[in-house]
Amino acid sequence: MRFVILRKSDATMESCAPVTPELIEAMRRYDDEMRKAGVLIAVERLQPTAKGARVHLSGGKYTVTDGPFSETKELIAGVTMIEVASREEAIAWIKRCPTLQSGNIEAEFEIREVLDC
Amino acid sequence: MMSSVAVAATDAHRAVEAVWRIESAKLIAGLARITRDIGLAEDLAQEALVSALEQWPASGIPENPAAWLMTTAKRRAIDLFRRNAMLERKHEEIGRELEEKQMNAQPGFDAMDGEIGDDMLRLIFTACHPVLSTEARVALTLRMIGGLTTPEIARSFLIPEATLAQRIVRAKKTLAEAHVPFETPRGAELTTRLSSVLSVIYLIFNEGHTATAGEAWTRPSLCEEALRLGRMVAGLLPGEPEVQALIALMEIQASRLPARTAPDGSPVLLLDQDRSRWDQLLVHRGLAALERAQALGGPRGPYLLQAEIAACHARALRPEDTDWNRIAGLYAELAQIMPSPVVELNRAVAVGMASGPAAGLALTEALVNHPSLKNYHLLPSVRGDFLYKLGRLAEARDEFERAANMTRNERERRLLLDRAKKCMQG
Image (cartoon, rainbow over all chains, first blue to last red; front, side, top):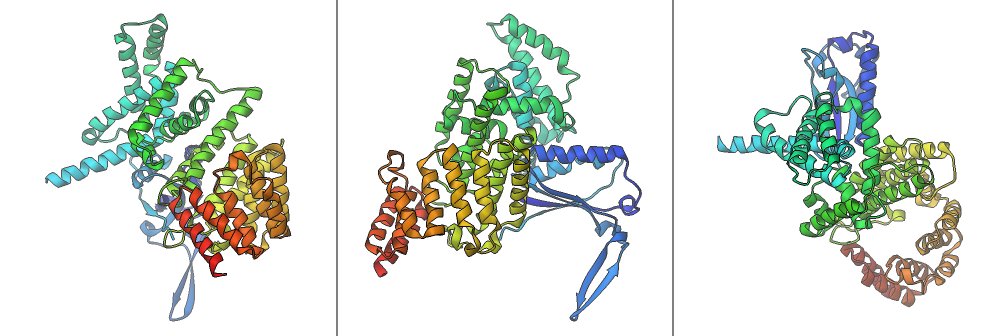
């Protein structure tokens, strides 16, 4: 089963604050762990929405709105695609994300199974 | 109330299984280094799993499930060695060593790079040891490295659970009796042993890709399993071109899975597939793996050549764009290093596409009486195709019917009978 894991953004991730080398290294190890377990298909971490844009179509007319966007909770900070045996396994992998390992963390992920068609 | 408790228990059970899928191979590998017996290591790991299934639904999943499982299994090992009436000195030493290591061992995912990676390799090479039958290698690999349960494996291969359980027990016994050391082979031995590992993985893949028996034409879960195993080995041996090549081959072949089955479940052959349904992500991953394999250099091995052939198809946007001359050349190269009537048959297909059905048919003549192809349904199937294209319909029909009688796959049999019928219609 293939899943897309969407990491929801937060104020820190939106702030363009530089990521510590320790965290970068921890993320690299995490990706490597998934890769070595044979489950990782693709992983991308996203720039803050300040560098993004929204394309909206309404009444046949396109509108492009530049970032940043304010509704932090709805924003996506990273996309991971994994191939695992069950939804529970996808959840177990999420729980290993190094960004969740220190202190009082608030974080949200969304897992979506890829449509098979 | 009752039902919500039951649901919670099932959820917890599934969560434990998920942890097991992730941790079991590393756990067994770590335990095998200590016990020097992968059979015993697996038993200990299973016992730890049973404890987890008993405790975790109530206590919740521990923060570091890997460490919990390892600690529990090591305690069992110590108990076992102590209880053992036949206690040998060796066991005593192991027991002491275990107790010393117990507290400082933290086999989490942090440690994957070093020791655990080495143990995993040892486990893979031991499970695929040539002292075992091919079936036993497949069963042990899926069970110990894939983390599949006996019922899951039995279901995948459509064999009774008891048969598979027996196979695993016998395999463990064979390894113990042959005193197969828990180690990664070196030098020249590595090459032959690695090819055993790769062939086990590819066999699992192929069983999923074209099920040899049963009602379904493909079993994608086995393909996924093989890919997972292959990616795992590639992660552990990144410098081996044949490992990268096998990944490339499997990813490209798996990319076609969505297009290989019609809505009614019947097979769709390569040239009839809707190429827009090929999984482009897998195609790109496959082509990237092929580039890595080529960049690593060395002699061109069988998986590299097969991956290059698969890549020829993957790169052709339409069937008529296929470079059949190149494919025929690659099969000829493959036949040099891996002489086989099946490779020769595939070369005949490519030559038939490049130079016409008469040339292809001529190459199959030498194969007709080959003993190892006596029951190989693809030979009459390919010949039927050539004869059909040459307008020799009565002969073509005979070949398709012969092929239909040979295959054990129900979907394939129907496809072949359909083609036989078309010959009668002219």
